Image (cartoon, rainbow, N blue to C red; front, side):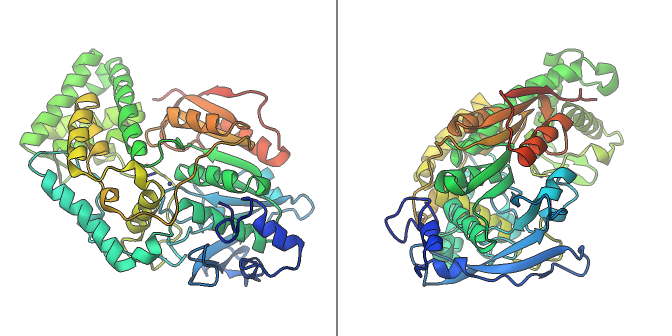
Length: 500
């Protein structure tokens, strides 16, 4: 999934001057107590590197009431390996919303070059309400956390009830907290981290939703923004309901590309000699599974279950292997489980498998951020969702109804403040795969337009969500920018490795 200054809401000051002014003078402004915190660093865990340190900071739940309730923000640090070359801190965010990021400095799935590690303290953090940062819960059952709900006339009333139940449970259990779990407040928390660490500016590497969070920070705190790398950028204008719909729109050309690629390899996959034949094979499987679910490695898959894997078609070889195995299973032949695609769009793992947080924390915090940030983008009338789902299933057969059907945001109470319009000339580097299923290319291009000082690196033919670690030239561009401050002279278009 995909969602001002530190003291703007405390006093009528410009978005970047409130905390800076209190730093420059000895004035004990209401937020000064947070900037003065002295972090007590400790080893993050017995099984983590000794140099990997963690601590917890306090931030106000409501920045308009800094003397009111306080919550925790858990952060981590891996110091720059060269004290001589050190230039600052690099904050990391894995996306979400709802994704914990405290472990990112030592996460092997995150590719950060040695040159960058020499120059920056790597700072991970669990955003407010997430992971170890005063984690929230709505008391949701496993079924209530399930997002993939296609439109069916016979089940729509139940889906409306699900959306209403999630919103009502969240409001009843944690409504006073959830309304403050916004991207703007997380950006304010990032600026508290900056101030506590004694830095005038921060650099940043954010993935997926983390690109939107980073962009909001640049809008709220341009003077505190140093070198920002946004990997797989969300469209800041469509963030919210439009984000789901953009995924469905992009799934259709990805599916068409897959049919063409697979038809050229009929002798390998036996799905059809032409794109039209491949397409027919797939939709025949959907019809068959809707009539009688396909037993695939012990799991019964309906047509809707198969369509829910639409992101897989951004990776042509993986999708061809999977559909070929589904076809075998449908025909009663032995299927190979390795053909099963993963559900997750974001490959970056949670902070720690040992963290004791509520089982519904990711879902609760994700809905809180999305709904509070973009309440205006969600219709209130359930019948509007019905009409949109029917329309978009016709437009985008693979998943249009998944995207446009009803969500808990339809019944969510407003957040603590309006969302953010991103429109500035702050320098940033945007990395984007051409065939990203979760943050489509058009969204990255829209982010590039909103951040007028940015440069964009597009990996042509690049498959899947997240560029980091998948293209050496794109990684090199990020390293060069973070270590020297030099953006590419112009936008770059790099070629991906040929699939298969």
